[in-house]
Structure formats: C-alpha cells, structure tokens
Image (cartoon, rainbow, N blue to C red; front, side, top):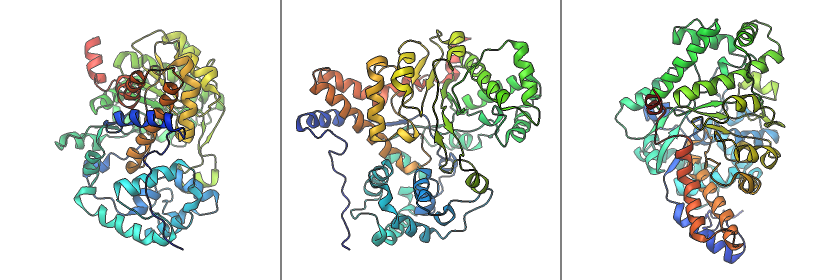
Length: 483
C-alpha cells in the first residue's frame, strides 16, 4: 500500500460556503498567532522544573492519553500492551511494540478530535509529511525519539516555541508544590502556575480519603479531625497555592449540588463523614456543603472557583482496580444546575467579587439551565465545551446553545484541560478555528459586522480567559487590596 502524504489543509474546520469561509479566514488570521493562555490542565509540573528530555513517542503521546487508549480498549486492545502503567508500578510494555500496535489501529480515530490533534502534532511539531500508519510506525517512532533527544524539544523550549503565555497545572491538597517552587527559583521566564483541587480531602467516598486527610493535617499542622481545624487547613493550603501562582480552585464533584447548612448542622455532618462507614447521602451532602464553604473562602482570598460536575468516574471497576484512576472509563451523567446551585447562589450569587466558572458534560443543560443562569448571576460564567465535547461539533453546539441567552461575554474563552502537553497548540487552534467559523456565519447572516466579529474572536481566544481567571491580577494582590 502506498504511503499517504500528511498535509494540514489551511481551511480545515471552516464553513463549506465560499463566502462564509472567506470571512472565517480573515477572522482566523487576526487570532491564530495570539499567545496561548491555558488556565486549566493536568500537565506534569516536573517537566518544567527538571526540563529533562521526554523519553519516546509512546511515553509522551500514547501512554498518558486516555482519549487514545479508551478508544483502543473499546476495540479489545489491552492497556498493558499500550504502555499504560499498572497502579503502583511502571509499564512492562516495549515502547516500540506499543507504538506499532497503536499504528495498526490508527483508523479507529478517523473523524475524531484525537486525529485532528495528533495530525497537528505530527505535522507542525515534528515536521512529518507522510501520514501515520502501520507502514510508517517505525519512521515516526525513530524520528520522534531523535527529536526528543535535542535541546529544541526539551519541555521549556517547547513551551516557548508554542508561544504559551501561561500554563496552569492542577495539584491536590497534600502536594508539596516543590516543582512549582523549583520552577520559580530556576530563573526561567515561563509562567507555570498551579490550581487547588481539594477533592481527595472533601470526597469521603474517595478511596484515599482517610490517608489524604491524615497527610493534610501533617502538612498544615492543623487538627483536621475537628471542623475548625479542617477549615483552617484549607485556608492555609490555599495560601500556599496562591504563593505558587494559583488564581483558581477546581472541584470535580459527581454532581453540582450545593448546600448551606447551619454551623451546628455542618459540624455534625463533618463528624459523620469521618466515620469508617460513611453513608452515600452524607458524603454527597458534605461535598455540597464544601462547595459553599469554598465559595466563602474565595470571597476572602480571590481564587476563582471552577466546578466540573457530572462524570461517573472510574465506571469500569476492573480497570480502576488494576490501573488506578483516570483510565478512560469516566462516563457523563445527567446533571441538574438550577436547583443544585441555588443554595450557593442564594448565599453568594449576587457577589460580583466571586468568580464561579461552571462546566458541564450534560449538553442538554446548556440552553435550559446554564446559559440562563450565567446570563443573570454576576458571579457565574460558563466554562467552554469540556472533555467529551471539546470537539469541533461540541464547540459549535456550545456556541449555538448558549450565545442567544448568555452572549459571548458570560463565557471564559477556551481551556484545553489536557495531560498531553504537545496537543495544547492543536487544541487551541481548533477552538480558534471553530469560533471564527461560528462568527463568520453571524457575519454572513448580517447579525454581526465583521469588525465586531474580529473583536469577539480576539476576546474568545485571549482576553476573556485572562479576565475570568484573574491572570493579570493574581489572587494575592486581590486579597491584599481587600484587606
């Protein structure tokens, strides 16, 4: 079989109609070279603190990417063979053999965002002009390996090459943040910040809850078995994260439920969730109460809250037990927002100083619940199409279902939410192209003037994310000003 060429079409993701496509081209030309602001993601800060070379194509592009291996697993490919490490131990797979196996199944990704992202990486980052597949698997593996051995492909060099202005990672309440401190002490000018993800010490159903809580107390020096000490531990850790550059918190709860209990009821609930056999109802109520407590703390310290609800995480019990969390078995669920968020919004929804960004995996909630909520409450903004929906179609649906009620300026631009460092430019490029295509349609329908559309395109690609995440006004400065 002849090897196909790899060429990225300049008009990819633009409208088919020639006139509308021409508008999209002009809009995209205004934003394509803007710096990348990535305010929420899951890349490893050690990459930037040590600046060590990446090992090979499998360890960099395949093994960490649950978008890839969940599809392969659905077709019967075992995760062990793809270089995915077992829980608590390294992978025993040969990296080249895993890469070859991946290449044999590359056809599975036709029409998916993974193919768009990876082809962008292959063409733009590594310079390939022949398509990936079984015939070129070794060529790809060798050339990628050779590139990764050079200084130009060290993490910091790629960060600069990608024109990244800011990259946020996500750490837990028991993380030492040593890598972030090392980045700052190194003198490197790249801005890598953290975000506070307290789920392991909030979710009593988390398998590591008890151990995380103990470590939480050790790190903070607080009696975390008392309600007062537990809250103080959160405040201290939030200060630590702010000192490491954080401007946001992140909450990955199963639902968007919030609660506003009395102090005595909250303290009684806290004592119940410390028991070995906590009930599901109490665990859910405590998560709900803690979103309200986190909002209260955000008003004090200026950290922007992100709520990422609606995923049934680790649905495949066998994979969870063998490989640990986040192995492609998370499934979207139906999610309520109007009733769920009301206790928090009753308490703090009219506070313009509170920043609350809400995401969803339930697209049916866009027009029915989320856009009307964001179109009313001063504190609330909509996060972009997320996870299963950060595809071209998902991004279009997001704009179509939210713009008429929330407008563009109650949204927060784009964040890539990725573990795959090299896909960041590809993901932002897709978002910019899709937004320009959407705006071009409004121009073609005489609903926007083209100069207005150009301004909106710039806002969606760059300005809104900096404003929503307070990136030009760090939380520490906000807190100092308030005091």
